[in-house]
Length: 459
Image 1: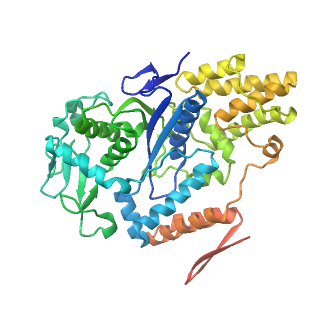
Image 2: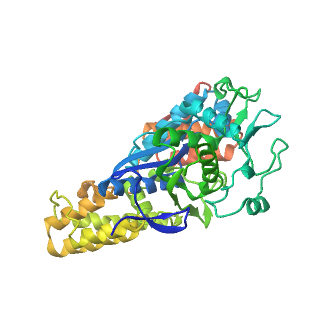
Image 3: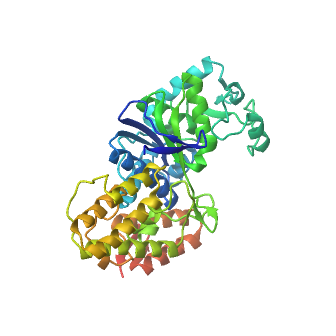
């Protein structure tokens, strides 16, 4: 059976066929880096890590682009609050992101472009859109996309412009000809720092969020590529707007397959920073080992909502121990996977059906049970090899089984918690500042404040 992918555009499973035989070009919307990544971000990056791993295991060359948004209202606000440059903030956050997702064995994409490196390409697209009558400059200096001038708007979300207009919650802005119109170029404000401004034919300013991804994806993968991915929350308006900009400028489909991962939920609400119900990756890794967190995410299908709780993580840890117990009892031999083997064939069938990790993980448990019965080093080797495709079971079994659940903080994690506490104090959120101090104390870290700053020592 060939690979089938659920295409959000068609709302159906489709046989996968790349534009260039043997080569998959995939773009995934990455992080807006003004703060530490939370477990919802990890879920998105993990979903597409598994996608690219399976594509490679299936024999494809994969060019995987996951961008970094390094200019944005929130980034500017945070840099000003901390009194540092935008570049200093984004460099710090990129380093933190790479450390956190590296711990989860999320592989580095082929390329990880920053939005600020592609401003000329963004301005080129805007110029084309304006020439085609799809964009206009408002009295404020902003350049907006004219949604009603693009006939295909709404095809990804499955709604007409009138339906979207009826349900929109956007405050009417006098600068826009229609409330659904969105900004391509933001005119510079006097209060914004100089490193948030670029020169253009429309005056000093900076790009809107949506145009960034259109420019980066088309510049690096071509005007039409195979897979475009991201979280389900990006389907509208971000991806809808990307389609309008890119196809409006180029007259070609942006991507052939659209993949969206489901939300992480806490108490049946989407986990997000705006709701304040999120857990950073670092907070989770302070309690659970990275492989347990990875297994917790991977064993749920990428399109299914993921319910976050300590109970579910504890269960994931116990389940993962069962697999490692089989590998601890029988030393695996290194093997090349024979896809005609019954277990490997079942695993492949599961992954070929829209990256069906729950069924693939079930194969791992069946295989582990057989290893326990037969004591076969070959089957143990197959268990380890199949697990490796999902980024699992590559640790030393005895070491994993003997390790505790609670992890110690490293110096970088402590420094970030101190920064978070300092930011909370500046914002007069003393309850949060005290909570961070108490959390660190519970993990054996004592903070000491002085006029020159905050230091720490082990309790």
